Image (cartoon, rainbow, N blue to C red):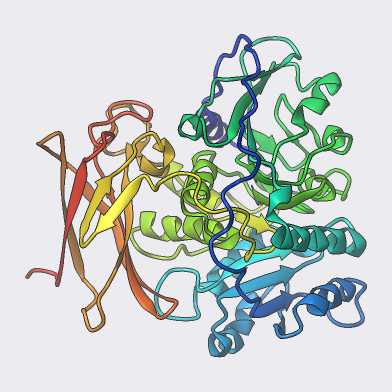
Length: 496
Protein backbone atom coordinates (compact mmCIF):
# COMPACT_ATOMS: atom_id res chain seq x y z
CA UNK A 1 0.00 0.00 0.00
CA UNK A 2 1.56 3.32 -1.04
CA UNK A 3 1.78 6.26 1.36
CA UNK A 4 -0.41 8.22 -1.06
CA UNK A 5 -3.13 5.58 -1.10
CA UNK A 6 -3.01 5.23 2.69
CA UNK A 7 -3.34 9.01 3.09
CA UNK A 8 -6.26 9.15 0.68
CA UNK A 9 -8.10 6.36 2.47
CA UNK A 10 -7.55 7.93 5.89
CA UNK A 11 -8.57 11.35 4.62
CA UNK A 12 -11.74 9.90 3.14
CA UNK A 13 -12.74 8.38 6.44
CA UNK A 14 -11.97 11.58 8.46
CA UNK A 15 -11.49 9.66 11.66
CA UNK A 16 -12.91 11.93 14.38
CA UNK A 17 -11.55 12.46 17.86
CA UNK A 18 -14.27 11.00 20.03
CA UNK A 19 -14.00 11.28 23.79
CA UNK A 20 -17.06 9.25 24.62
CA UNK A 21 -20.80 9.66 24.80
CA UNK A 22 -23.99 8.04 25.92
CA UNK A 23 -26.23 5.87 23.83
CA UNK A 24 -29.15 7.62 22.14
CA UNK A 25 -32.61 6.42 22.92
CA UNK A 26 -33.95 3.64 20.71
CA UNK A 27 -36.21 4.82 17.91
CA UNK A 28 -39.92 4.18 18.37
CA UNK A 29 -40.12 2.95 14.77
CA UNK A 30 -40.37 -0.84 14.72
CA UNK A 31 -39.77 -1.40 10.99
CA UNK A 32 -38.18 0.32 8.04
CA UNK A 33 -40.60 1.76 5.45
CA UNK A 34 -41.98 -1.18 3.46
CA UNK A 35 -40.39 -1.88 0.06
CA UNK A 36 -42.02 -0.27 -2.96
CA UNK A 37 -42.88 -2.78 -5.66
CA UNK A 38 -42.14 -6.49 -6.01
CA UNK A 39 -38.74 -8.07 -6.23
CA UNK A 40 -37.62 -8.19 -9.90
CA UNK A 41 -36.97 -11.44 -11.74
CA UNK A 42 -33.50 -12.96 -11.88
CA UNK A 43 -32.68 -13.03 -15.59
CA UNK A 44 -29.26 -14.63 -15.69
CA UNK A 45 -27.01 -16.70 -13.43
CA UNK A 46 -23.32 -16.41 -14.33
CA UNK A 47 -20.77 -18.87 -13.00
CA UNK A 48 -17.17 -19.87 -13.56
CA UNK A 49 -17.70 -23.57 -12.70
CA UNK A 50 -19.18 -26.58 -14.50
CA UNK A 51 -21.28 -29.53 -13.37
CA UNK A 52 -18.24 -31.50 -12.21
CA UNK A 53 -17.26 -28.84 -9.68
CA UNK A 54 -18.53 -28.98 -6.05
CA UNK A 55 -19.56 -25.34 -6.49
CA UNK A 56 -22.20 -26.42 -8.99
CA UNK A 57 -24.32 -27.24 -5.91
CA UNK A 58 -24.63 -23.49 -5.36
CA UNK A 59 -25.84 -23.02 -8.93
CA UNK A 60 -28.47 -25.70 -8.37
CA UNK A 61 -29.53 -24.13 -5.07
CA UNK A 62 -30.18 -20.83 -6.83
CA UNK A 63 -31.98 -22.52 -9.72
CA UNK A 64 -34.25 -24.38 -7.32
CA UNK A 65 -35.81 -21.04 -6.42
CA UNK A 66 -35.17 -19.29 -9.77
CA UNK A 67 -35.89 -21.97 -12.42
CA UNK A 68 -36.46 -19.43 -15.23
CA UNK A 69 -33.03 -17.80 -15.05
CA UNK A 70 -30.56 -18.57 -17.84
CA UNK A 71 -27.23 -20.07 -16.75
CA UNK A 72 -24.16 -18.61 -18.49
CA UNK A 73 -20.71 -20.04 -17.92
CA UNK A 74 -17.73 -17.69 -18.17
CA UNK A 75 -13.99 -18.04 -17.87
CA UNK A 76 -12.46 -16.60 -14.69
CA UNK A 77 -9.86 -14.89 -16.88
CA UNK A 78 -12.04 -13.88 -19.83
CA UNK A 79 -15.66 -13.13 -18.89
CA UNK A 80 -15.85 -10.81 -21.91
CA UNK A 81 -16.26 -13.91 -24.11
CA UNK A 82 -19.85 -14.09 -22.83
CA UNK A 83 -20.73 -10.58 -24.06
CA UNK A 84 -22.41 -11.73 -27.34
CA UNK A 85 -24.66 -14.17 -25.45
CA UNK A 86 -25.48 -11.62 -22.77
CA UNK A 87 -26.17 -8.94 -25.37
CA UNK A 88 -28.86 -11.19 -26.88
CA UNK A 89 -30.39 -11.92 -23.48
CA UNK A 90 -30.27 -8.25 -22.34
CA UNK A 91 -30.69 -9.19 -18.66
CA UNK A 92 -31.67 -6.54 -16.14
CA UNK A 93 -30.66 -8.52 -13.04
CA UNK A 94 -27.88 -11.07 -12.83
CA UNK A 95 -26.25 -13.17 -10.14
CA UNK A 96 -22.66 -14.42 -10.16
CA UNK A 97 -21.85 -17.69 -8.36
CA UNK A 98 -18.09 -17.75 -7.82
CA UNK A 99 -15.65 -19.79 -5.75
CA UNK A 100 -13.62 -17.35 -3.65
CA UNK A 101 -10.41 -18.05 -5.56
CA UNK A 102 -12.05 -16.90 -8.82
CA UNK A 103 -12.91 -13.44 -7.48
CA UNK A 104 -10.17 -10.85 -7.28
CA UNK A 105 -9.82 -7.27 -8.48
CA UNK A 106 -8.92 -8.44 -11.98
CA UNK A 107 -12.14 -10.45 -12.28
CA UNK A 108 -14.19 -7.66 -10.70
CA UNK A 109 -12.88 -5.19 -13.25
CA UNK A 110 -13.16 -7.60 -16.20
CA UNK A 111 -16.73 -8.46 -15.32
CA UNK A 112 -17.72 -4.81 -14.85
CA UNK A 113 -16.19 -4.06 -18.26
CA UNK A 114 -18.05 -6.97 -19.86
CA UNK A 115 -21.34 -6.01 -18.19
CA UNK A 116 -20.92 -2.49 -19.62
CA UNK A 117 -20.51 -3.68 -23.23
CA UNK A 118 -24.00 -5.04 -23.91
CA UNK A 119 -24.79 -1.76 -25.69
CA UNK A 120 -22.86 1.29 -26.86
CA UNK A 121 -23.02 3.47 -23.75
CA UNK A 122 -20.34 3.42 -20.99
CA UNK A 123 -22.69 2.27 -18.19
CA UNK A 124 -23.14 -1.21 -16.80
CA UNK A 125 -26.13 -2.83 -18.49
CA UNK A 126 -27.42 -4.95 -15.61
CA UNK A 127 -27.61 -4.93 -11.85
CA UNK A 128 -25.61 -7.80 -10.39
CA UNK A 129 -24.36 -9.32 -7.17
CA UNK A 130 -22.03 -12.13 -6.12
CA UNK A 131 -22.80 -15.26 -4.11
CA UNK A 132 -19.71 -16.87 -2.63
CA UNK A 133 -18.38 -18.21 0.66
CA UNK A 134 -15.56 -20.16 2.23
CA UNK A 135 -17.25 -23.38 1.06
CA UNK A 136 -20.20 -24.21 -1.22
CA UNK A 137 -22.27 -24.89 1.89
CA UNK A 138 -21.51 -21.43 3.25
CA UNK A 139 -22.46 -19.87 -0.09
CA UNK A 140 -25.79 -21.72 -0.10
CA UNK A 141 -26.45 -20.56 3.46
CA UNK A 142 -25.74 -16.97 2.37
CA UNK A 143 -28.09 -17.32 -0.61
CA UNK A 144 -30.85 -18.68 1.62
CA UNK A 145 -30.48 -15.73 3.98
CA UNK A 146 -30.89 -13.30 1.09
CA UNK A 147 -34.12 -15.03 0.10
CA UNK A 148 -35.43 -14.97 3.66
CA UNK A 149 -34.88 -11.21 3.68
CA UNK A 150 -36.69 -10.91 0.35
CA UNK A 151 -39.74 -12.69 1.76
CA UNK A 152 -39.57 -11.02 5.19
CA UNK A 153 -37.86 -7.61 4.92
CA UNK A 154 -38.86 -6.84 8.51
CA UNK A 155 -36.00 -9.03 9.76
CA UNK A 156 -33.80 -5.99 9.03
CA UNK A 157 -34.03 -3.80 12.11
CA UNK A 158 -34.51 0.00 11.60
CA UNK A 159 -31.18 0.63 13.34
CA UNK A 160 -27.87 1.84 11.93
CA UNK A 161 -24.36 1.69 13.37
CA UNK A 162 -21.69 3.85 11.74
CA UNK A 163 -18.38 2.21 12.72
CA UNK A 164 -15.93 5.00 11.89
CA UNK A 165 -12.73 3.18 12.80
CA UNK A 166 -10.07 4.39 15.22
CA UNK A 167 -9.99 7.80 16.84
CA UNK A 168 -6.70 9.28 18.10
CA UNK A 169 -6.90 7.95 21.67
CA UNK A 170 -4.16 5.50 22.61
CA UNK A 171 -6.45 2.93 24.20
CA UNK A 172 -8.65 -0.01 23.26
CA UNK A 173 -11.98 1.44 24.38
CA UNK A 174 -14.96 1.34 22.06
CA UNK A 175 -17.39 4.25 22.16
CA UNK A 176 -20.96 4.12 20.87
CA UNK A 177 -22.29 7.66 20.71
CA UNK A 178 -24.68 10.20 19.24
CA UNK A 179 -22.09 11.90 17.04
CA UNK A 180 -23.33 10.80 13.63
CA UNK A 181 -20.58 11.53 11.16
CA UNK A 182 -22.75 11.46 8.07
CA UNK A 183 -26.29 10.42 8.99
CA UNK A 184 -27.69 13.24 11.09
CA UNK A 185 -30.54 13.52 8.58
CA UNK A 186 -31.71 10.08 9.73
CA UNK A 187 -32.47 11.23 13.28
CA UNK A 188 -36.08 10.58 14.14
CA UNK A 189 -36.48 8.19 11.21
CA UNK A 190 -34.32 5.27 12.29
CA UNK A 191 -32.13 4.71 15.34
CA UNK A 192 -28.68 5.76 14.06
CA UNK A 193 -25.53 5.70 16.18
CA UNK A 194 -21.79 6.21 15.71
CA UNK A 195 -18.92 4.08 16.98
CA UNK A 196 -15.18 4.62 17.45
CA UNK A 197 -12.39 2.56 18.91
CA UNK A 198 -8.95 3.61 20.12
CA UNK A 199 -5.61 3.13 18.40
CA UNK A 200 -4.86 -0.09 20.30
CA UNK A 201 -7.57 -1.91 18.41
CA UNK A 202 -11.04 -3.28 19.00
CA UNK A 203 -11.32 -4.90 22.42
CA UNK A 204 -12.87 -8.37 22.50
CA UNK A 205 -15.09 -7.33 25.39
CA UNK A 206 -16.76 -4.81 23.10
CA UNK A 207 -17.78 -7.27 20.35
CA UNK A 208 -21.38 -7.40 21.70
CA UNK A 209 -21.69 -3.70 20.83
CA UNK A 210 -21.90 -4.74 17.15
CA UNK A 211 -25.09 -6.71 17.74
CA UNK A 212 -28.66 -5.57 17.20
CA UNK A 213 -28.27 -3.41 14.07
CA UNK A 214 -29.94 -3.86 10.68
CA UNK A 215 -27.56 -1.53 8.80
CA UNK A 216 -23.83 -1.34 9.50
CA UNK A 217 -21.04 0.71 8.02
CA UNK A 218 -17.35 -0.01 8.62
CA UNK A 219 -14.81 2.73 7.92
CA UNK A 220 -11.08 3.17 8.43
CA UNK A 221 -8.05 2.01 6.51
CA UNK A 222 -8.38 -1.65 5.60
CA UNK A 223 -6.59 -4.81 4.55
CA UNK A 224 -8.01 -8.13 3.35
CA UNK A 225 -7.88 -9.55 6.87
CA UNK A 226 -8.64 -6.53 9.06
CA UNK A 227 -9.46 -2.90 9.56
CA UNK A 228 -6.31 -1.09 10.65
CA UNK A 229 -6.26 -0.48 14.42
CA UNK A 230 -9.69 -2.08 14.49
CA UNK A 231 -11.74 -5.19 13.93
CA UNK A 232 -9.95 -8.28 12.56
CA UNK A 233 -11.40 -11.24 10.67
CA UNK A 234 -10.63 -13.46 13.65
CA UNK A 235 -12.57 -11.15 15.97
CA UNK A 236 -15.41 -10.83 13.49
CA UNK A 237 -15.77 -14.62 13.54
CA UNK A 238 -16.62 -14.36 17.25
CA UNK A 239 -19.05 -11.46 16.94
CA UNK A 240 -22.80 -11.99 16.82
CA UNK A 241 -24.19 -9.67 14.18
CA UNK A 242 -27.90 -9.43 13.51
CA UNK A 243 -29.55 -9.90 10.09
CA UNK A 244 -28.15 -6.85 8.36
CA UNK A 245 -27.05 -5.00 5.25
CA UNK A 246 -23.37 -4.15 5.68
CA UNK A 247 -21.32 -1.49 3.85
CA UNK A 248 -17.53 -1.33 4.13
CA UNK A 249 -15.47 1.64 3.00
CA UNK A 250 -12.25 0.12 4.31
CA UNK A 251 -9.73 -0.83 1.62
CA UNK A 252 -9.61 -4.43 0.39
CA UNK A 253 -12.23 -5.77 2.83
CA UNK A 254 -14.01 -7.40 -0.14
CA UNK A 255 -11.01 -9.64 -0.91
CA UNK A 256 -11.96 -13.31 -0.85
CA UNK A 257 -8.63 -14.90 -1.82
CA UNK A 258 -6.12 -12.87 -3.88
CA UNK A 259 -5.07 -9.27 -3.29
CA UNK A 260 -2.69 -6.86 -4.96
CA UNK A 261 -0.99 -4.16 -2.94
CA UNK A 262 1.29 -1.31 -3.92
CA UNK A 263 4.87 -1.97 -2.83
CA UNK A 264 8.29 -0.44 -3.49
CA UNK A 265 8.98 -3.02 -6.20
CA UNK A 266 5.61 -2.83 -7.90
CA UNK A 267 2.41 -4.81 -7.38
CA UNK A 268 2.70 -7.35 -4.58
CA UNK A 269 0.39 -10.36 -4.83
CA UNK A 270 -0.78 -12.24 -1.75
CA UNK A 271 -3.40 -14.91 -1.14
CA UNK A 272 -5.55 -15.43 1.94
CA UNK A 273 -7.13 -18.55 3.41
CA UNK A 274 -10.93 -18.45 3.92
CA UNK A 275 -10.62 -17.92 7.68
CA UNK A 276 -8.21 -15.01 7.08
CA UNK A 277 -10.56 -13.13 4.76
CA UNK A 278 -12.56 -10.35 6.41
CA UNK A 279 -15.09 -10.66 3.58
CA UNK A 280 -15.68 -14.41 3.84
CA UNK A 281 -15.87 -14.12 7.62
CA UNK A 282 -18.50 -11.41 7.20
CA UNK A 283 -20.51 -13.68 4.89
CA UNK A 284 -20.60 -16.34 7.64
CA UNK A 285 -22.42 -13.85 9.85
CA UNK A 286 -26.22 -13.56 9.46
CA UNK A 287 -25.78 -10.67 6.98
CA UNK A 288 -28.03 -10.57 3.90
CA UNK A 289 -25.80 -8.28 1.80
CA UNK A 290 -22.29 -6.87 1.95
CA UNK A 291 -20.81 -4.01 -0.12
CA UNK A 292 -17.00 -3.93 -0.14
CA UNK A 293 -13.95 -3.40 -2.34
CA UNK A 294 -11.59 -6.00 -3.77
CA UNK A 295 -8.75 -3.44 -3.93
CA UNK A 296 -7.57 -0.31 -2.16
CA UNK A 297 -10.70 1.79 -2.19
CA UNK A 298 -11.86 5.27 -1.25
CA UNK A 299 -14.17 5.83 1.69
CA UNK A 300 -16.63 8.41 0.34
CA UNK A 301 -18.44 6.30 -2.32
CA UNK A 302 -19.66 3.93 0.38
CA UNK A 303 -21.56 6.82 1.97
CA UNK A 304 -22.94 7.76 -1.44
CA UNK A 305 -24.18 4.18 -1.88
CA UNK A 306 -25.91 4.30 1.48
CA UNK A 307 -27.43 7.72 0.80
CA UNK A 308 -28.72 6.64 -2.60
CA UNK A 309 -30.18 3.43 -1.20
CA UNK A 310 -31.85 5.05 1.81
CA UNK A 311 -33.27 7.98 -0.17
CA UNK A 312 -34.64 5.95 -3.08
CA UNK A 313 -35.63 2.58 -1.59
CA UNK A 314 -34.02 1.01 -4.64
CA UNK A 315 -32.83 -2.57 -4.97
CA UNK A 316 -29.36 -3.28 -3.65
CA UNK A 317 -28.21 -3.92 -7.21
CA UNK A 318 -29.35 -0.44 -8.23
CA UNK A 319 -27.38 1.05 -5.34
CA UNK A 320 -24.24 -0.70 -6.58
CA UNK A 321 -24.95 0.25 -10.20
CA UNK A 322 -25.30 3.89 -9.14
CA UNK A 323 -21.70 3.74 -7.89
CA UNK A 324 -20.48 2.28 -11.19
CA UNK A 325 -22.47 4.92 -13.12
CA UNK A 326 -20.84 7.65 -11.05
CA UNK A 327 -17.37 6.34 -11.91
CA UNK A 328 -18.10 6.53 -15.64
CA UNK A 329 -19.51 10.06 -15.40
CA UNK A 330 -16.61 11.26 -13.22
CA UNK A 331 -14.25 9.80 -15.84
CA UNK A 332 -15.61 12.28 -18.36
CA UNK A 333 -18.55 10.14 -19.40
CA UNK A 334 -16.30 7.25 -20.45
CA UNK A 335 -15.82 3.71 -19.18
CA UNK A 336 -12.49 3.04 -17.49
CA UNK A 337 -9.83 1.06 -19.34
CA UNK A 338 -8.96 -1.59 -16.77
CA UNK A 339 -5.44 -3.03 -16.45
CA UNK A 340 -4.62 -6.62 -15.52
CA UNK A 341 -2.62 -6.64 -12.31
CA UNK A 342 0.24 -9.10 -11.86
CA UNK A 343 2.60 -9.54 -8.94
CA UNK A 344 6.01 -7.97 -9.51
CA UNK A 345 4.90 -5.71 -12.35
CA UNK A 346 5.49 -1.95 -12.13
CA UNK A 347 2.85 0.30 -10.67
CA UNK A 348 0.83 2.45 -13.05
CA UNK A 349 1.43 6.17 -13.07
CA UNK A 350 -1.88 6.89 -11.38
CA UNK A 351 -2.60 10.15 -9.60
CA UNK A 352 -5.17 10.60 -6.83
CA UNK A 353 -8.09 10.73 -9.30
CA UNK A 354 -7.15 7.46 -10.98
CA UNK A 355 -6.44 5.69 -7.68
CA UNK A 356 -9.92 6.59 -6.44
CA UNK A 357 -11.72 5.84 -9.72
CA UNK A 358 -10.16 2.40 -10.13
CA UNK A 359 -10.52 1.63 -6.42
CA UNK A 360 -14.21 2.52 -6.45
CA UNK A 361 -14.75 0.42 -9.58
CA UNK A 362 -13.47 -2.57 -7.59
CA UNK A 363 -16.43 -2.43 -5.21
CA UNK A 364 -18.69 -5.50 -5.25
CA UNK A 365 -22.16 -6.27 -3.94
CA UNK A 366 -22.17 -9.64 -2.23
CA UNK A 367 -25.80 -10.77 -2.23
CA UNK A 368 -28.94 -10.82 -4.34
CA UNK A 369 -29.08 -7.60 -6.41
CA UNK A 370 -32.89 -7.75 -6.57
CA UNK A 371 -33.30 -7.44 -2.83
CA UNK A 372 -35.54 -4.58 -1.69
CA UNK A 373 -35.16 -4.13 2.04
CA UNK A 374 -37.14 -0.92 2.47
CA UNK A 375 -38.80 2.05 0.83
CA UNK A 376 -37.27 5.55 0.92
CA UNK A 377 -36.31 6.63 4.42
CA UNK A 378 -35.62 10.24 3.38
CA UNK A 379 -36.06 12.51 0.35
CA UNK A 380 -33.43 12.69 -2.37
CA UNK A 381 -30.82 15.43 -1.88
CA UNK A 382 -31.13 16.67 -5.48
CA UNK A 383 -34.40 16.96 -7.38
CA UNK A 384 -34.70 16.98 -11.18
CA UNK A 385 -37.21 19.00 -13.17
CA UNK A 386 -36.76 19.32 -16.92
CA UNK A 387 -33.07 20.22 -17.23
CA UNK A 388 -32.64 21.86 -13.83
CA UNK A 389 -31.05 20.17 -10.81
CA UNK A 390 -32.10 21.63 -7.46
CA UNK A 391 -30.46 20.99 -4.09
CA UNK A 392 -33.39 19.78 -2.00
CA UNK A 393 -31.57 18.73 1.19
CA UNK A 394 -27.89 19.61 1.66
CA UNK A 395 -27.80 17.56 4.88
CA UNK A 396 -27.44 14.47 2.67
CA UNK A 397 -23.91 15.71 2.31
CA UNK A 398 -21.93 13.01 0.51
CA UNK A 399 -24.19 12.98 -2.52
CA UNK A 400 -22.93 16.56 -3.00
CA UNK A 401 -19.26 15.51 -2.81
CA UNK A 402 -16.94 14.71 -5.73
CA UNK A 403 -14.62 12.10 -4.29
CA UNK A 404 -12.42 12.03 -7.40
CA UNK A 405 -11.45 15.64 -8.23
CA UNK A 406 -10.00 18.61 -6.33
CA UNK A 407 -9.60 21.33 -8.97
CA UNK A 408 -12.54 23.44 -7.73
CA UNK A 409 -11.64 22.98 -4.06
CA UNK A 410 -10.23 25.88 -2.07
CA UNK A 411 -8.42 23.29 0.07
CA UNK A 412 -5.38 21.68 -1.59
CA UNK A 413 -6.12 18.02 -2.36
CA UNK A 414 -9.63 18.46 -0.96
CA UNK A 415 -12.82 17.27 -2.57
CA UNK A 416 -14.81 19.29 -5.08
CA UNK A 417 -18.48 19.75 -4.42
CA UNK A 418 -20.72 18.19 -7.06
CA UNK A 419 -24.30 18.16 -8.27
CA UNK A 420 -25.14 14.85 -9.94
CA UNK A 421 -28.39 14.21 -11.77
CA UNK A 422 -30.11 11.80 -14.14
CA UNK A 423 -32.48 13.35 -16.66
CA UNK A 424 -34.94 11.33 -18.78
CA UNK A 425 -34.80 12.25 -22.47
CA UNK A 426 -37.99 12.45 -24.52
CA UNK A 427 -38.59 9.94 -27.33
CA UNK A 428 -36.98 11.25 -30.48
CA UNK A 429 -34.89 13.82 -28.59
CA UNK A 430 -31.32 13.61 -29.92
CA UNK A 431 -28.48 12.71 -27.61
CA UNK A 432 -26.78 15.91 -26.48
CA UNK A 433 -23.21 16.29 -27.68
CA UNK A 434 -22.64 19.29 -25.45
CA UNK A 435 -23.85 20.15 -21.95
CA UNK A 436 -23.29 23.52 -20.32
CA UNK A 437 -24.27 24.49 -16.78
CA UNK A 438 -25.27 27.63 -14.91
CA UNK A 439 -25.19 27.28 -11.13
CA UNK A 440 -26.86 29.66 -8.68
CA UNK A 441 -27.14 29.73 -4.89
CA UNK A 442 -28.86 32.39 -2.83
CA UNK A 443 -29.54 34.47 -5.93
CA UNK A 444 -25.86 34.58 -6.92
CA UNK A 445 -24.08 32.88 -9.77
CA UNK A 446 -21.66 30.12 -8.75
CA UNK A 447 -18.80 29.22 -11.03
CA UNK A 448 -18.83 25.55 -12.00
CA UNK A 449 -17.68 23.06 -14.61
CA UNK A 450 -19.25 20.02 -16.24
CA UNK A 451 -17.10 17.05 -15.25
CA UNK A 452 -18.77 14.51 -17.52
CA UNK A 453 -22.01 13.39 -19.11
CA UNK A 454 -23.29 10.47 -21.15
CA UNK A 455 -26.61 9.02 -22.29
CA UNK A 456 -27.65 5.56 -21.13
CA UNK A 457 -30.15 3.13 -22.64
CA UNK A 458 -31.86 1.58 -19.60
CA UNK A 459 -35.22 -0.13 -19.12
CA UNK A 460 -36.59 1.11 -22.44
CA UNK A 461 -35.68 4.73 -21.62
CA UNK A 462 -32.83 7.06 -22.45
CA UNK A 463 -31.25 8.75 -19.46
CA UNK A 464 -28.73 11.58 -19.42
CA UNK A 465 -26.29 11.30 -16.53
CA UNK A 466 -24.40 14.49 -15.77
CA UNK A 467 -22.05 15.75 -13.07
CA UNK A 468 -21.36 19.43 -12.44
CA UNK A 469 -18.69 20.55 -9.96
CA UNK A 470 -19.09 23.92 -8.22
CA UNK A 471 -16.36 25.10 -5.82
CA UNK A 472 -15.91 23.78 -2.31
CA UNK A 473 -14.57 25.97 0.48
CA UNK A 474 -13.79 23.17 2.93
CA UNK A 475 -14.67 19.60 3.79
CA UNK A 476 -18.40 19.23 3.02
CA UNK A 477 -18.60 23.01 2.66
CA UNK A 478 -19.37 25.19 -0.35
CA UNK A 479 -21.83 27.74 -1.75
CA UNK A 480 -23.96 25.13 -3.50
CA UNK A 481 -24.75 23.38 -0.20
CA UNK A 482 -27.90 25.31 0.54
CA UNK A 483 -31.50 24.35 -0.01
CA UNK A 484 -32.84 25.71 -3.30
CA UNK A 485 -29.46 26.10 -5.03
CA UNK A 486 -29.81 25.20 -8.70
CA UNK A 487 -27.83 23.99 -11.67
CA UNK A 488 -29.57 24.78 -14.95
CA UNK A 489 -28.34 22.64 -17.82
CA UNK A 490 -28.37 23.52 -21.50
CA UNK A 491 -28.32 20.48 -23.78
CA UNK A 492 -27.44 20.70 -27.41
CA UNK A 493 -25.10 19.91 -30.25
CA UNK A 494 -21.48 20.95 -30.04
CA UNK A 495 -20.93 24.50 -31.23
CA UNK A 496 -18.46 25.12 -34.07
